[in-house]
Amino acid sequence: LSSVELTECYVDRMTSLNPTYNAYITPCEELAIEMAKKSDDRRKKGISGGLEGIPLAIKDVFCTKGLRTTFASKIMENFVPQYSSTVTERLEQNGGVFLGKANLDEFCMGSMNTYSIAGSVANPWDISCVSGGSSGGSTATVAAGIALGAVGSDTGGSIRQPAAFCGVVGMRPTYGWVSRYGMGAFCSSLDQGGPIGRTVEDTAHIFQAICGYDPKDSTSCDLKVPDVLGMLTRSVKGMSVGIPREFYEASYSQDVRRYWDQSRAILEDAGCRIEMVSLPYASFALPCYYMIVCAEAASNLARYDGVKYGLRCHGNTLEEMYCNTRGAGFGPEVKRRILIGTYILSHGYYDAYYGKAVRIRNLIQEDFVKVFKNVDVLLMPTTPTAAFPLAQAPRDPVTIYLNDILTVPANIGNVCGISVPCGLSEAGLPLGIQILAPAFEDGRLFQFGQVLE
Ligand code: GLN
Image 1 (cartoon, rainbow, N blue to C red):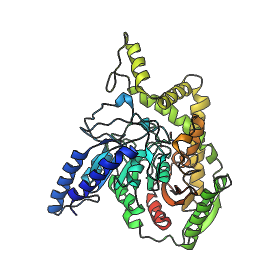
Image 2 (cartoon, rainbow, N blue to C red):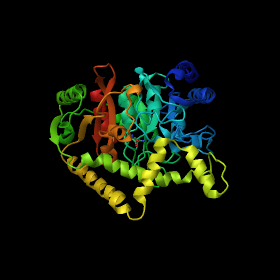
Image 3 (cartoon, protein in one colour):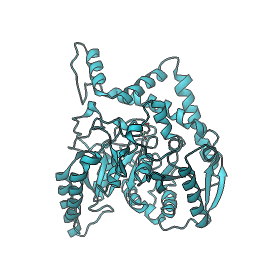
Image 4 (cartoon, rainbow, N blue to C red):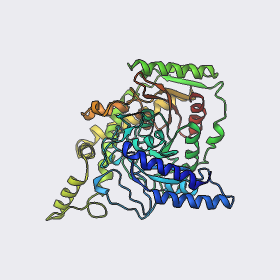
């Protein structure tokens, strides 16, 4: 099969199915065919990258030179970047073909993919259900077979949670492994791009392509890139797996508990030692996360002022122009976080809120360091429930934030994680199980993921 033939097949599927799922904000059929032709030329010359000719979806938070990049926001609706993100550049260098820019929650804030200027994404398993978010467009493209793989970003679960809801594999790399250059900033100290695939192996190929030092990102780590493809065949026999007691004792649906126990049994059968472990501060990860992301978002989003780029609304004074532009350009969730963030960073409140959250973050990181002295990985569900119908989606923000209770500990704790499908709920919707590993031990995620698949 040539790259053009494969791409044509995916372009056809995308054209006929995307109106149902709304997984792409900007499909780019012509660019895809052009990239596939270049891939075939390379193949003729005997050159083949790790993703040669593979049709991919790109979360619309990664800048792509000459191709509209919206962040799912009205304020950047017509933004055409002058440069590409390192992630998309590396995908291209490895032979990847871009089918289009995938839908997301505005500026990656959300967990249902309902806060998007392009409208919500339908879950391919049941189109009346949410896809999860914020990388719901990316995970839905893979689940619906309108991309072979995708990239998303995971600041607080935005790859793993929608991957679980859509029945695909999604991974949050260790912070610093994947360059943030050219990726729309939401919460710079937590934002991390990562791969999404139908299988653990597919996901490993995408990770291998995007991982590695980038001098254009000051927080990028200059370490030797691990051979994660090599880890796929490595046995887990004799390794140890921790079950975080605090989460295990909380109440979840029967489905979630059943698959957790089942995954544990699979690992036991594979020769792993299972141990109950304790993460005493992890229950504070959720409030701590929302303090930190609101503070950083308020600061990062100050750049959208109608002057440098994006939407500009008329005003009689500069201040009026700022207010009109930001008032019309940002959606309700983004505004909520800017307001909360500005409040908690203001004089007199900074230490009570932001300072305290940073101290708790350190305690949670220490919890993980301690636990990983005794076990190689942790095993826990990705989400408290399966995907739910859009019509029954919670409306109050705090209930929505509670969706993230099982994903944010990894981000705040500075560890890496992967979500792998583990079975279907009673309603026939997919559920995911997570493996968490210490920072820079991302290879272990693939090693264990392969066993659980
Ligand atoms: N649900 C989280 C939030 O709204 C996820 C964010 C993310 O990982 N981008 O902040």
